[in-house]
Image (cartoon, rainbow, N blue to C red):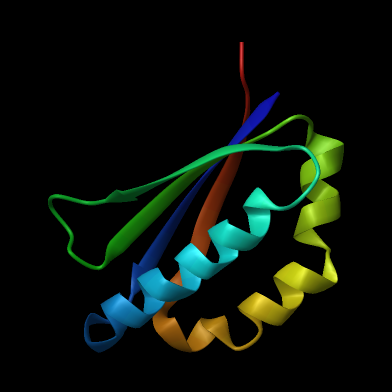
Length: 94
């Protein structure tokens, strides 16, 4: 099993819209084969920072989701919400 930790920094005037987009992406992930769990974290020190922790059965399955048509449709144009590109790291769950 793997976990993916991703940080997003929303533009101050688009924080609610950015959260809505990430929640929509999360709802679609829940329907994907191999999805395990997802949590959204809101920073206590940076109001614009939205972090997600997503768990998948394997890295291969996550890669399928990452390149899926469903994800592409949801995330098309999402760069308009962020002050900088998201930062993501993958972890093996032990």
